[in-house]
View (cartoon, rainbow, N blue to C red):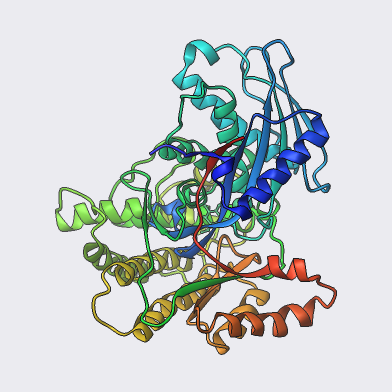
Length: 512
Ligand code: NG1
Ligand code: MG
């Protein structure tokens, strides 16, 4: 399926107002009309945190908050540069010179600047265009562009403003450099943007891009990464008297992913990678080690272990019941194998992998900067397997709900969300006191389940409610959290910080 092309006349009024505004703003800055607008939304992850980079499936949905890029394409001979303007004055105007010979733009990950994210989207789009149209783009520059960006996904908030921005940019670059008849597929746009943030030093998985690109109105997504990337959309079950809803509440604690990566995000990726390899080495199974960054995942270990121990010729095919059985067995294996509960020093880890400290350092600690005293292999692996198990249980509950009361459904799904939060906090160490507080308030005022969403260490939380009790949970959060902590907060800011969210459309190009 290709990324949709939508005529601005067909947009719903709320979206239309935003698109009209960005078109107007473009005109004010550049004194001409843009050619088109590209759009990509943020996402909220319902369950399945920190497991996408281990190739386990996740359950996110795209949200209405999004990033819009109004684009004017420079005609041939009118310059090979990109001018970038952001509606938010905190992000100053930038110029990017496009290399004449079509070589890559340079990205310096040590400098924290918003234009780096633009360059990430630009770079992956360019690589794709070079692969698909080598004659046109092999040794030649892309078209110059004027861009006006407007985003309302909170940054550093766990709603994936970065993926929304990068996906909107990559889409804009492809659109600006191809014929009108050319349409990029959702799968291709996801595939190329998944690795884009690696250029700014974040070793992320692919959930955010898949959700942002593939989102559908009123549908959540089940995103699988193996054997290939696949997003299946589904509706929430109908309740008898009310409707399932999700509240998103921002802690207002901003976690800058790039700056905190060495002790937070990238360190977790290292810990689970080392855990997978220690398990593989103990059970004498081989992991597929492809490329420089990919050094084996807990999913690969699970597949390899199964083939080896159970003599199966194939690995797990995604069947829910089989997956539940296998993940339970993995939890047992972790319990018995990763016995150093207090953590592994570099020496301990090297010993477990039967290699020297130098080799260990070279293999695991040099691709992305990390800082730690010990690697918590037991805790991190236990989180990944138990969280993946919860995703399958949640999916089963969502898709095969025959009998059972609404209350039973809400309580079971909520319990999984609460279990996820507990695991993120205790085993993965990615919660924070503000997140805990929002979850406590929501639960004690009727939310069925509450958890952090996105990478954590601040950012947003998500809460399962129904249309019957959404207002009372919302009010409790406002009174007991926001009004108490942020006495000066405007109504507008409050409405952005805490809201009932609906599954929304993914990436699209808007024709004017
Ligand atoms: P956020 O915090 O929304 O950027 C990050 C990763 C995801 C995933 C989640 C944790 C990026 C771009 N995204 O999401 O791939 O690993 O954390 O589940 O870093
Ligand atoms: Mg992000």
